[in-house]
Amino acid sequence: MLYAFKTIRPGEANGYFGFPPGVPLLGAALERATGNPRAVHWLTPLTAAGLVIAISALGRWLIGGWAGWWAAVGLLGSITFWQFSTALFSEVPGAAFIYTGLTLLVFALRRQRDDAWALGLALVGTSLVSASLFMRFSNLSIWPAVLALPLLLAGRRAFRQRRTWVSLGVMLLATGGLFIFNTVYYGGPFVTGYSPQHGWYAQPAFSLSYAFGKSFMDGYSVPVMAKTLWTDMGGFVLLALIGLTAARAPAARAGIDRAGPAGAYAVYAFAPQGVNARFIFRPCPRCFCWPAKG
Image (cartoon, rainbow, N blue to C red; front, side):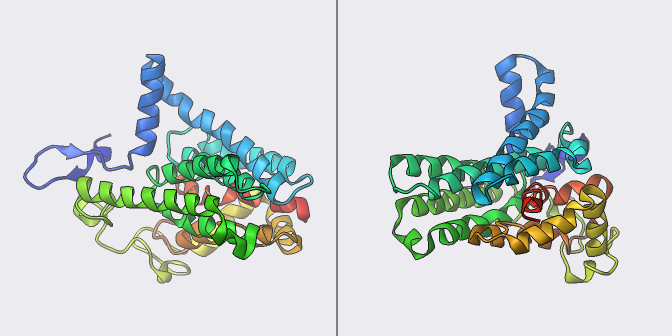
C-alpha cells in the first residue's frame, strides 16, 4: 500500500497517491452509494460484464453476422479475462469504458441523420472513452481510433457532420484536462506517478531495443507478447488474422485501435507476461471479433 502513495511534493513529508484517479474514484463512488467499504470489489466484475456486452455489440455493428456472439464467447474463454476480471487493476474498467464508448460512437456515426440522437450518442460515447484516460495514462493511445472512426464510416462527409466535431471536441477537452491534472498534481503535463522524480526507474520505460532485447526489467517484449497471446487465445489468433484480412468493411479492416496499445507494449520494459499480461488486455477483447470472418 505504501508504494501507492509514492508521489512526493517538494517541501512536504507526506506521500501522495501515485496512480491515476479514475478507478479509485469509481471505487469510492460504489462505497458511498452502498455504505459498504467492501463494495469496491464489485467494480471489476461489474465492468467485466459490461465489457462482454460492449464487445459483443461492437462486433455486431462493425462486422455484422455472428461476429458479436463470437466475440463474447471468445472473450469469456480468455484466460487473461478471467485472471483480471475480479482483480482491482485498472485494465478491465478502462477497457469496459473504452469499448462501451466506441460502441456508442459507432452507433452514432452509422445513423442516417446527423440529428440530436446522433449528437447525444457521440457525446456519451466519447465521454466514456475520455474517462478511461484518467484510469490509465496509456489509454491516450486510443486517440487514433477516435480520429479514424468518423473517416472510416463516413468518409469525407465526416468533416461536415456535427457528431464528428462533438466527439473530437470531447476528446480534446479530456486530454487537456488530463494534462492540467498532471501539472497540478504531479508537476508537469507529461509527468505522472510513474516519472523518475516520483520513484520510477531512471531508465526509459519504452525503447525499440526492448522489443527483441533485454531491458532493465526483462525485455524481449515482442516474442513474449506473441507467446502470451497464443496461450490466451490459441487458434483464435490465426482465425483473427484471417478474419481481419477477409473483412470487407473499411472500419473492420482498420481494426480500430489494434496497433496503438499493442505497439506500445511491444517496446515496453516490462514484458507482457504473468501479472503484466494485463498490459495487452485492452487490445485483446476486440481481437475476438475477427474470427467470425475467419
